[in-house]
Length: 120
Length: 335
Image 1 (spheres, each protein chain N blue to C red):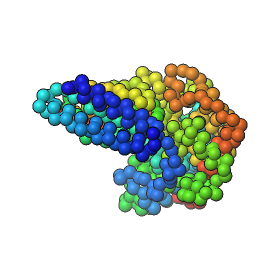
Image 2: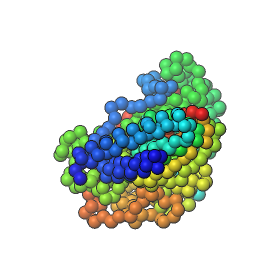
Image 3: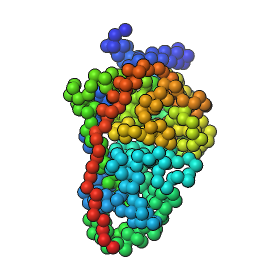
Image 4: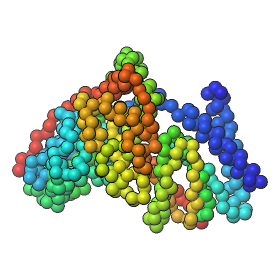
């Protein structure tokens, strides 16, 4: 498959994913049921997310880089939760326990550091 | 409906991950030098602070016995390290660690071999107060510097008043260190488009570095490090980062910060413990894959190079040397 075609297909897939995610958010507003949010991890970043996380939602984070990560999350009360090691291509999940500000970091790569604000 | 949506999303994710991994390749532009030196908003670079920081950096009166300055171990004669396997004063330690260079430290995201300092300002006071290094304490140092008349105008110029504090000492030392940036190397000229700047052997080495040997998995960016922490399988009891973070994080046991590959000394020492003295030995260690243990980095994947490929890789590493970064030592203030 040539590079251009692969890029186009990737783009299309992302658009479809975004549309589905959007419909999921709308569904959440009406049904108030927990939602699974897709997130991506690159070499040294969490890719920007557009959804608004709420308590009891689940994050499904995919390591899209070709290196391993070791993500940990610091809770609003300072508790640290380790999510073990995430190999390239793996998707791992974490369910948000409550509203507040969470810090997502990587033990291996200190440069990875994102704050996530969770609504009730 | 929920099930179908989940399946489609999973399929999309898997496909895009596959495409993304396949395209995860490095090019010359990934190694382009930055245009400016970064500094935190609360400690911007100023000429006055650089002058003060440089003076403090070279002043042995920052140590208890007035016999050791920062420059004693971070010497410009040794690419701002010391060229020693065991640092001065660490001879009696059971697990001494080699002195890292302070060049290009403005860009560091984690400092010290185990990452226990997260800024240059935080790091600056550690050697001063460490017993086997400068063995002093900040309270007495502030008092001592206050008694040296020549320091008053330097602090006054840097901070608009002559008060001496621990924080101001740390900020000035950090500011000076941020100005120590590698000279332009032949590799940099090649990145900028000068095709003849490095040999064809070195160009092949660049391909191996990014390809077969996968050095770029950790030694990436223009500094040739992503400041990540890995257990590279050395035969050392030192737990490294494992000593300063929760013990259940197995992957950080025996892990040390990925050092820069710029301006490497000709004969080492290399590795956090200075246990290797030539680059061929280093490369062979990575080819072997290191000691197999639970904490071993997932990036440690054995491979095999030919003699020629090893030569090419070393030729490439030598193109990262911009030569000695020389500065004029300061005139130390009089008592």
